[in-house]
Length: 406
Image (tube, rainbow, N blue to C red):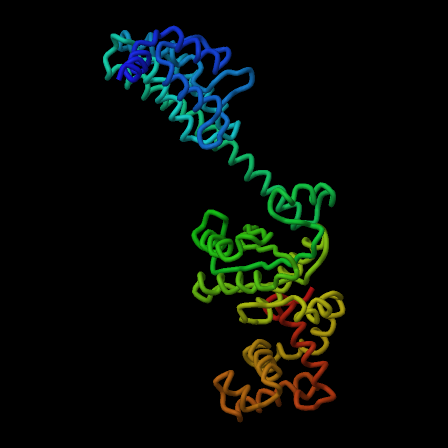
């Protein structure tokens, strides 16, 4: 009993000064504080960092620097914080955001500082008012700086995407920047471009939903999703076709079947991504001109159309020489051109083409005879069929007769 009482008495009667000396020894450079335990907690929050977040500015200054003086003066009189005091909190909040610190430990630091430095005679409401104003100003500076960081990051990302898809810039610099945005340009990539019933940017609901579901499915893949010129764009490694196929399914589903996706061929390097992107755009353009409505198009399957369009003047001459006489028909060239398109698309089967156009077989046959009469080319003759079909494809690529040949 005596030993127990002695120990107890020693613990309760221990003088305050040795405790403060021990605190000073553990936290070097800190003056003795009348409440050692709270000091240790607060300094752990602001110097060691809560949740693994470092909370110290260069030179040992903390993010609650000067708050004790502000609290002592303002709480004692019940006054509001001055403009200069509020600006000092905003500046520290901005510096905390720029340092990349989490918000929760910073708030804990202010709450702890308010508890420890509360003036003995100050009213609790005055102390809470000072704390509220200080934290509000601190959060204002923090949020402003965060928004600025986000805008700078988004601007850098947009600049990188524009350079990458346009094939501009130094390949070495693009490769170095690509790691920051999840790509490794040493690999081959393919680009998928999606168009929908309206133009999109990254803040619209459709691209946001596509992005959320795409990254939820492939969160560990090195893929890039963005919008450009009103279209959705997905860049994925060339050996991961499942990513682009799933992207096409998402677009088709989320747009209610109104979206269409084209995939460029797999290419290597930064310049290759730009080429794959251009191929996908060209495939969408061909699909629009030719009336292809498949939800997923592949540029590799449509190479014949760029070949035809490569020599534009020769293609215009073919259309002019072969199909221009159709303009003399009653109703113009378009009805007969539609007839030829349906006829060739159905494998030159008159009955199937008639159903496609909601015509009788006799009416369709009459139209084919009119084509023969006007052009001198017989659609039913295999010797003439290739020339006529190529001219029909060329007319669709050139948007003739809606747009005059020139």
